[in-house]
Length: 150
Image (tube, rainbow, N blue to C red; front, side, top):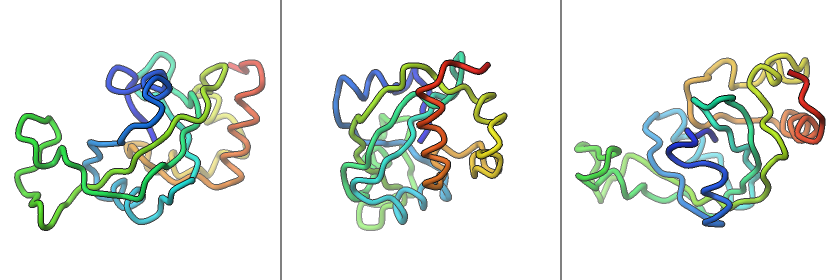
């Protein structure tokens, strides 16, 4: 799951302990969240549009998917006039803080790691939510404990 740190950062999640992941407005990303995420699933928290961009920690899914209330809020930048309360279009989950890595695993380091060459992130890097295999997750956890390579 990626977020711009100016919008919502790993530090924000650490302070709040648990928070809803709202504002997903891409159907493919929504479907990953709505159809594939389950309570207890671990997720990598990625800071995008940051210096540097990269994975900064781990969160876990803390709720089942439910309608994203910002789709009905006319004051929200995520308002969607096509969404009805009886038939919501957009969904969200709550995520809980698990761990902040001691360093950011930079995008360049992820791209240069052989075991991560087939990540969905490289195929659909514009999505705010992409699936990660268990092996990829474990590789990134190991990278987090090493001194920066880049």
